[in-house]
Amino acid sequence: MSEHPTNGSRTAGQPSTPTHEGPIEWDATAYHRISDPQFRWGMRVLDRLTLRGDEVVMDAGCGSGRLTAKLLERLPRGRVIAVDRSLNMLDEARQTLAPFGDRVTFRAANLQEEPSEEPVDVVFSTATFHWIRDHQRLFHNVFASLRPAGRLHAQCGGAGNLDRMHGRAEALMRHPDYARYFEGWTDPWEFASPQTSTTRLQTAGFEAIETDLEQEPTPFPDAPAMRIFVERVVLRHHLAKLPDDATRNAYLDTLMAQAGEDEPPYVLDYVRLNLKARRPA
Image (cartoon, rainbow, N blue to C red; front, side):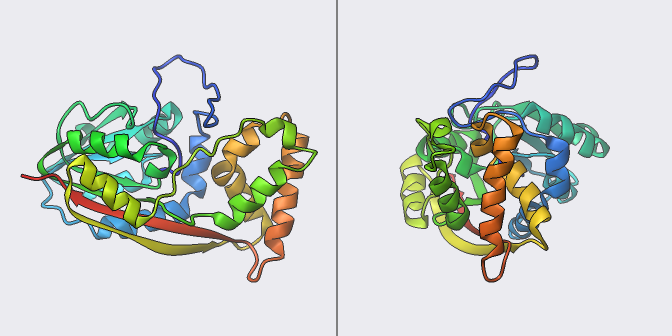
């Protein structure tokens, strides 16, 4: 579970270089500490997943492993393949999930480009798929990763997700103080509607498809709490474009001042897209 991209891969020793989508690597220790909203949403998604307890499950976007641990607790006779793009996240997850021994394996993978190396019973994912721009290719690879009658059970950002914060960030990108740094900017996410997602899942071959949106307005107690979350999670791709700490701080100062004027203040307008589907038997 990680609100970050998994649509690329690299091997150990490669540098963490920015791409057109933004930086590859994360501060996984910080994410583990501040990702309570993602963990809370993920627990509700997990609670809706029916398991026998002996399945092989891919956690697509395992992040630091907080939610993966809860998934493993529900698989006493099963296994999890923990997949993430970020090697920092996988290192953090290895520490988090060490008590589960060989019931969990780890893989740095490109979900948009390749299916699982091992067919699985369930592909489980939260707070990840919206970072993958080509959902049609993603769903084809998820389909190929599943055994016959295998299930997709996922949640990600959906249509309308973070519209207020992203809208303000986009407006600020056009300000003369910042515009030159954002030349050629491309949004790194795909916030799809339920209807579009249903069509894409059907095209990939799935049946028993269910898609819907959940409104998840997420309040923060004060400006510092919201600021670190926005800095480390929500706008990290934007901030990576800026040349130094002073410029990044000024950019964040403006956005936090705007968030403080909202009623109520310091609320992120999250919208989650639920995805359930089955590969035919």
